[in-house]
Length: 112
Image (cartoon, rainbow, N blue to C red; front, side):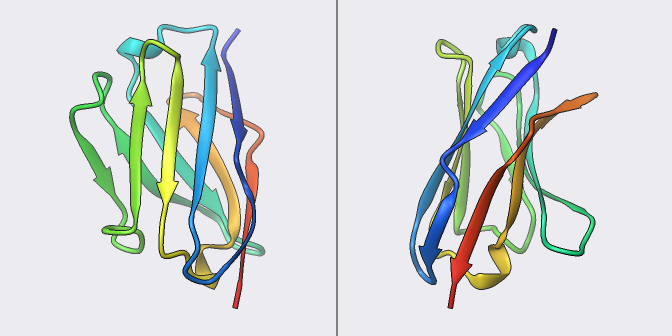
């Protein structure tokens, strides 16, 4: 079955960086468009970024454009999200997702 396991979250100060990883299994990762979504405390799910199956094309929410970079390693079945210049409003649970599935999430907390 589809498994998506996120890691790399943590507590960081404003302006800091984190790299999230998502280990994928149970489906053909190299053929899959993948996304990151997040959920801040008390709010709904927010789309963050998506990348096409080959990793050649990515899109970003305006709130993270220029600060976050999504990438995927099809040889390792792993999706990444490099997050730089983090802000307190980036505090959320971050989920790796594909159509019909998402992982358990990893907590990112940015202190001011």
